[in-house]
Length: 110
Length: 108
Image (spheres, rainbow over the protein chains, first blue to last red):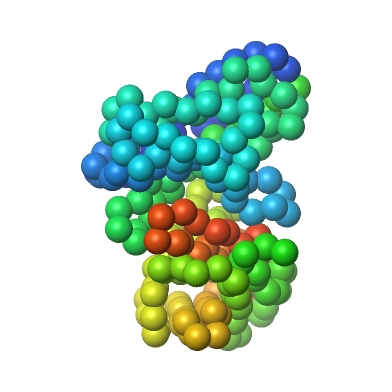
């Protein structure tokens, strides 16, 4: 059981570039989440999914898109990266009340 | 005002001390999570509780539903306990409200 994995672990983008972050879980969880973590602000929900084929906006969705074509994968896309999107991104999945986090992706936008 | 408030924000303790981190929440939740984030960045779920008290090794978590308050205690603290501890409330829609974390440093 790999749990929740994220790729890549690190990435540096130039302003305006695009990229996709991949989150994968092998626990058959319905719920998946993308968060960003910034100093002094705690974790903030970007988008989430309650099942395959469904997505919903969280607290800070602007500038991001997501897709959940397969139950095990939750993709986070940045169409045109901005320096304000420099952050650490965490993916999580949950089943019932239990919650599992991925190791994080550190993204820097210059 | 954040839906979940933690205190203190920063805490420094001597090895062996008893530590308490507090969490208050203002929203309805179905469960409360305590998370640990080490300097390397990974987040680990320590406890999930909806009532009463849970214990795991030197860690104890309690919750008072009426007072909307939870505490995380660490007995006989050790330098390896140094981390950021995050409180998170989960509502019935499986959405989380996170505190901003308590940064704990345990000095040998």
